[in-house]
Length: 256
Image 1 (cartoon, helix red, strand yellow):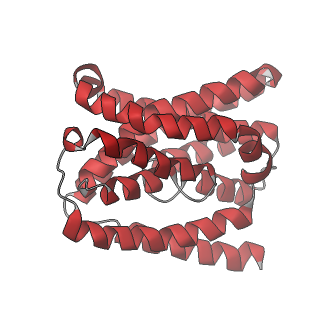
Image 2: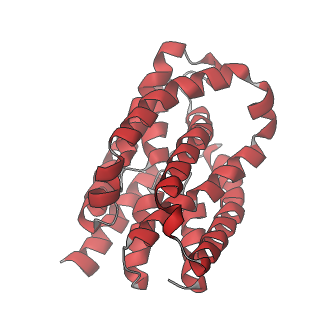
């Protein structure tokens, strides 16, 4: 991996972290296209640069982080099941799931179908316009949906948005819940991984992490704003179709 690769991966991460298309899946597929071997550093790089995207959300939602206790109660209740699953399956995720192109392609396609169906459901049954209106008992269920994203290609944001809509949140509120829930989730995942592997990084690898981190931060800032504007007049169906098209194209070109 070189600086150019780090920039490209940072842009891909920033573009896809908060869209329901699977940032991890896109990073894995992009690394394959660029010819980057999926060694331990690459796997850690793909986890660590997500922190850049997450800090973009902290910046954009700073006032809500500081003052909105009702939102934080729901976020932390949702984080508990995700954290338990993530820590319990860390070795399986890092050793067998990250870097598996076939798993990514299958889940991209199936996730696209689920996203389209959930979007149709939301047209009739999503009535909660603010995160604070969500009953506390439903928040951990959204966390369980997010826990499915330990499998590459599922999409953390996609699973959380689907869970939020099924719990009654409007499209925009489900997206914002997903944004904010990403902060404790990805912060814990990144710090845990760096604690496990950071001591083995060399000087130039830390430089690559820095470049990817900064690129992801800037790209995510722009993407979140554009995504929320898009949701004011559109749903998630286009993202479901996109997932399915990418899965089929990648499978035909690289796996068959």
